[in-house]
Length: 298
Image 1 (cartoon, rainbow, N blue to C red):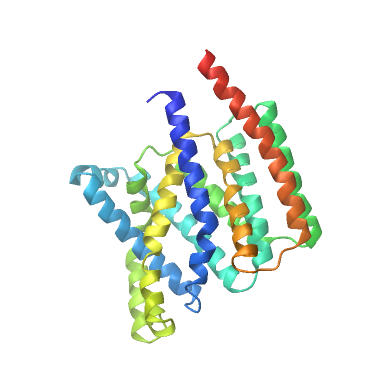
Image 2 (cartoon, helix red, strand yellow):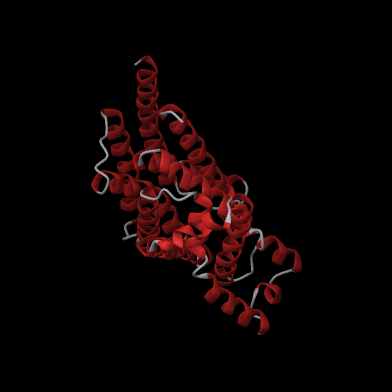
């Protein structure tokens, strides 16, 4: 596969996962009043099972078990799994605890941190269009922080945990399905024990929610694994800078869903931040277009 084909495939994957994440608030709203902690434990188990099933269909036994021969790789997968699980947990808890403002700040800060990781850790080089886009994005985030006048601890936590996860995924050559499998399979026994306990005591999803919500919740593994697989593919084929900027699609869609579908309150500063960030994305898109055009001509 040539460079242009890889870049195109990575871009489509990045676009797909962020569109998916952007409309996911509709799904989470359908699960109320099931506790966020319950959803998190079910999410770990169902993601592991979905990835295991997909791995068994797609790969042979030797390929699936091969990562276990590399202890450092296994440890890296476990740590990556802990960070993405922490990210899920912080987000779901924050939404249920009515810290929507801080999660919004986190959404906008997250790609900035991912971009900075690309610059600092992987020494990625930026052109003038990318620097301009990064500057506009940073201004948009700072405007939100100044307006609310508080240190966004939850937002920073969301941004940091996902950026670390993205950076760890960058250096992996493992197929996305197997990567996700090993990120969750080692956490699955603990999560399963907790699920059995809370369900047996009437505190789980079956005892709290409606029967249809329970069955809908079981899809969270599939709804988590698919976009994360796309994200893993994007990080392997694109620079972290590009991956980071594509992530602004997710909060933008979530914002639209929140206002027009879920009827949530909307602060004027978010309109300002939205406009500033997307001005930066226009510069970025133009730079990417020129880069791809030059590659075709060479």
